[in-house]
Length: 231
Ligand SMILES: Nc1ncnc2c1ncn2[C@@H]1O[C@H](COP(=O)(O)OP(=O)(O)OP(=O)(O)O)[C@@H](O)[C@H]1O
Image (cartoon, rainbow, N blue to C red; front, side, top):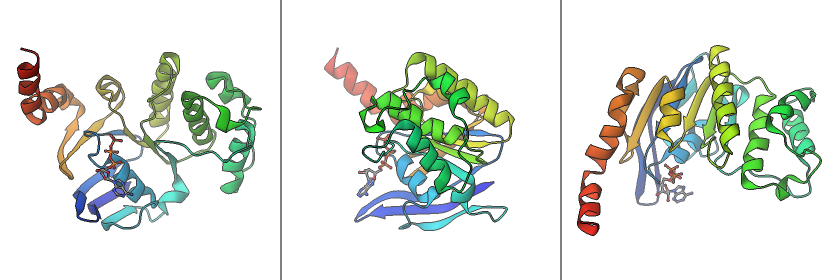
């Protein structure tokens, strides 16, 4: 299990995370929600070790290094210039000292032009390529920052199916999304971040309350403002 305890992160005077505690268990899909700027990407960066300026504890409880067993889909995947999709996939595998496998079966699903330069891909194709690089590896955990964002409708459905399969096979998946329906259809648990803290953990039975909580509690004043603006 990946355990996050009392994680805090500030940027200058701005305290973004204030003692966040949550777990990611193998064989579960855990959603992370919160308003723009709530600190989801910051949490992910700390969790994956891309950002080390935090206090608190992040560990894989069986003692494995998180980066060894975890694949990360960043919010905006980065690609070196003049590298083809196929070269990028091979590079990702070689960087982890894994054999370069045949990508064609996976690519039948995602239909990427693998001989084309990745930097010339559309935004959605770039996301697909970064996803493909994770799917061809065998990670114990996946951290996916907005995986559905920018994907076409068909690929959204495929990705949902893939995530459910991976969960069945024991992968622990942490994902952020602003698409409530997608989250409630896939997640076992959803954590709501607000004001730098965990506002609430929701289990599947409570998902019905999530939209109500978001709209009624957190945005009550904004709903009133809409009524004032559009009487
Ligand atoms: N490197 C940084 N330096 C300064 N401030 C930062 C840095 N990274 C993030 N922040 C600030 O931390 C806050 C949280 O940002 P973060 O990207 O984690 O939010 P988020 O929940 O992922 O938002 P979104 O839903 O818009 O992607 C924001 O106010 C952001 O400006």
